[in-house]
Length: 461
Ligand SMILES: *[C@@H]1O[C@H](CO)[C@@H](O)[C@H](O)[C@H]1NC(C)=O
Ligand SMILES: *[C@@H]1O[C@H](CO)[C@@H](O)[C@H](O)[C@H]1NC(C)=O
Ligand SMILES: *[C@@H]1O[C@H](CO)[C@@H](O)[C@H](O)[C@H]1NC(C)=O
Image (cartoon, rainbow, N blue to C red; front, side, top):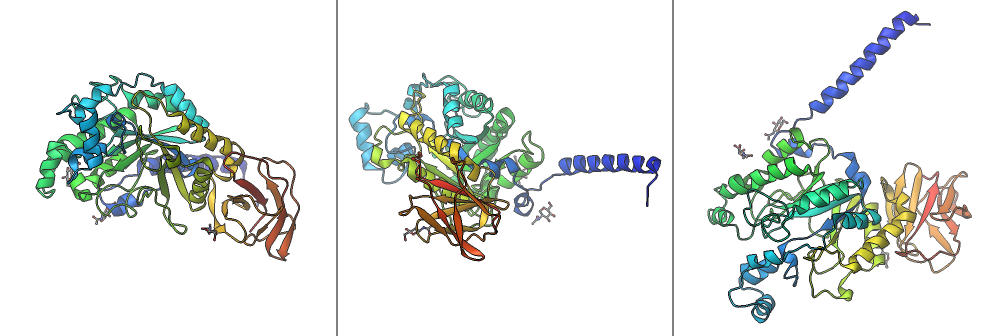
């Protein structure tokens, strides 16, 4: 039958208004309570899963000694017994009585050009950048009013590093995140709470939380990458109270993502995306969004002057790791450690630009992809799968020994089409069985940085 126009029109207008009001309500109604049931149910903002690749930066006073790794202070003066290598290094190279805070004035950052860094990160193909706003040493890379004389504005660079890098990163349309350590190795209030078996929360109330709230309001990070949580339970850190505010009332409530390091027992269980352990890779497809954080320098996150080329991941290793991570549904957060004078070591820059060159050709199989029904197969060479609807990407992480490659998992149909990314011509293929598997005739594989090639298969089940 026909609706009279004069009746239809107001209905449409009313419906539109209704949808609009519902949209408004559902946005403002996203409120969370300070318990894990409520917080864990928050959907992760979609930008994060689509981004796939981020750059992690460990930069702080630890970059000045630049020896062993960013835990230097702890190895030297915290752990019992101390690391003899660090003790000897200090006694050989520094005057007696030299204290760790005396490294701060040498954190000059005199060559730090945030635009240059952001250009490198952009060229890497990463979609987000995470900077250490404060590592376990407690030094803040911004003028925290709660970290008097132990921050980058009062001493060292005399500069708000968090702000300056953030401006440069965001002007290149990259998301900006901040790493924040909950605990501080040597903070007297923390040590006091620890001595009290974490029954008191003086450090949390007077230092940690005021600083963290202030950091969020000032810099509006898209990621809060929490760390240093493991000595105390989430109830000591007031993690659920902080996250309820972050998700319900903070200026970044609709965009921010966080990880899972919010107290002993939380990693891999509570929070936003899961990091689980450093450099963690699951054996099979997890049900929860996760991120692998790892470092180009296999032995350190912070810059160290005793770094050797054999201790770095080479580009094919990085690409394989990225591909495996994305195929298993993860994001890849790749770390570099800048020097105390503000340079990204050129060898790291080369790696990052290499990743970007690989993504220039193969990024279509990475960004905004979803894990496929099958994540890997290994009939001849290791192959990882990603997907976008009925398009499936098979990423070959080694050169096949023959000019053909066999894929056993994809189910083809007569309209299936196969191409090699970076090569416009469709490839010939034939089914192995009427409904499962195919053999693809490969062209001469071009040299590409990263040594991994992507086959795009259209109309696949
Ligand atoms: C957690 O918060 C929700 C409200 O979002 C509430 O319904 C639930 O009872 C709370 N759970 C606990 C264990 O407090
Ligand atoms: C910390 O948690 C306690 C217990 O839930 C709560 O009473 C207090 O208001 C919280 N403080 C902050 C600053 O989050
Ligand atoms: C593929 O096989 C090789 C050799 O057996 C093995 O080392 C590798 O872990 C396998 N890769 C996958 C993705 O199963």
